[in-house]
Image (cartoon, rainbow, N blue to C red; front, side, top):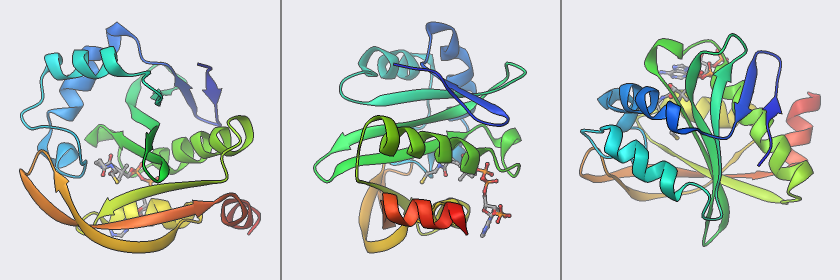
Length: 174
Ligand SMILES: CC(C)(COP(=O)(O)OP(=O)(O)OC[C@H]1O[C@@H](n2cnc3c(N)ncnc32)[C@H](O)[C@@H]1OP(=O)(O)O)[C@@H](O)C(=O)NCCC(=O)NCCS
């Protein structure tokens, strides 16, 4: 897997030395509850397990600032509907446009390098910041359904978003 670069960020494959940072940031309930597959509490054993499974058809990247600070992760996960993309950042790093910048780079990789035609992503209805990131990237609402949030231990209303390469490029040009 390759290393991707954007203006402020490096997207690189995860390493065992990322386990500590993953556990620090993903053990924050405010991060975990917005994700479908992150349990709470979250410890280093969960990060180890995730990294052991990481390839498995997935494309997982650490989002690192160019000064070397671990910010979070992003990736593409194959599922029944093609590829789902997702992202998370440690709370201190929210609000600086990093998620949009990282997702933009990941999506360019998915369309240009992997040759995918569409991607999809879901956001829980109580997570408007993520909904806003997806809208900024050109994704369109494609239905809503209840989806399990592992950390919350219950199903939560989730909006599914579809991103086509044409919409992504249109948004980029706007
Ligand atoms: C969602 C998340 C990735 C956003 O990261 P971020 O780097 O702060 O996002 P960005 O700064 O790139 O963009 C966020 C946008 O949402 C907007 N926003 C923030 N809070 C908002 C709210 N409550 N309502 C509406 N918009 C909001 C911001 O203003 C920004 O838009 P702008 O650039 O037009 O001003 C981050 O909060 C996070 O990791 N949350 C926990 C995990 C998670 O939710 N992952 C996504 C699962 S779908």
